[in-house]
Length: 381
Image (tube, rainbow, N blue to C red; front, side):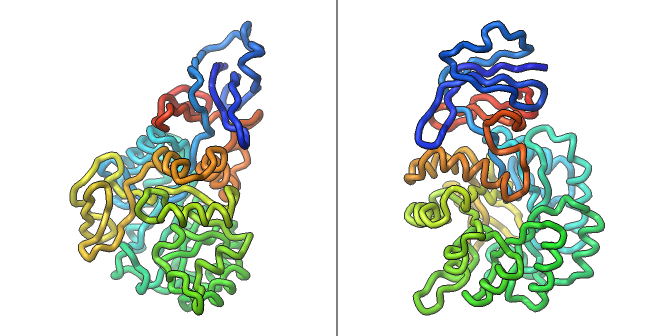
């Protein structure tokens, strides 16, 4: 099976190049300048004229909870399929099924449903599971359900891994909790990305967690202490540690544009990841939703609890990419933040780039960053 994508713009550092891309089965076979007309005599099964629109590697959302009125913690395969569908429609070809703090039974049920869907996704590919909780600090709970927040429990985590196997790719914890340093060691031994958020950790506690093996910050600046010049806290510890990458919810609400630019200036595209952290209102709109044990009101696209606390987002990955560029992030870097960097963090060696030998998971965008066409596993969707 061969597909030829012609006349598309791809980002190459500080410029754009007009190219033709030949795909064989699920991989990129060759990339040539469109002017060379190299593939004019190539016999192909599908031919796409990109009309000089932007082609990017499929983005990867490592932190998403729901979409299309479905919450992936609701215990059904349909909810996961609906998120898969919406992810692909909005620029992601891969995602992590992300939990919220819950009972062990509810979490294990989500894991079971995820296992049933993998390999049968109707949209974006499931690349694993991100556990956001339950080992988080109630002082920084955000929208996490306080009824289920608890201290780390290695026996419980053993049960989770027994059910999930190697599907657990990322776990968000609060390192200051009793037993969390031992948990970080446990997770690193299983090659899991250990992330920090919903945490009240001091600068010193965060540094110890990084020494122990934590390498990532979930929704940086949100659900953690603000920077203070005499109490620099978790964020400062992360910003000055080159080995630590950060997630950013670029929706114009969770982070001021100046903070987005600051994160980029300090971390660069290789240390910064675009996420949605979306709840089931993504793709639906304003209204009242049940999420994480709370009533969440979405008004003008902003999701809040009754007390005004931000509760996830409704932004999509293509919107986050557009906003990043509008905020001053160079296009090539913004694309890396949505595609290459999350792939690297997850250890996905054939995703996140438009390069020979890489998986043909591609997204064609118009000038407004709206998705025009998707290619997944080499097939036009």
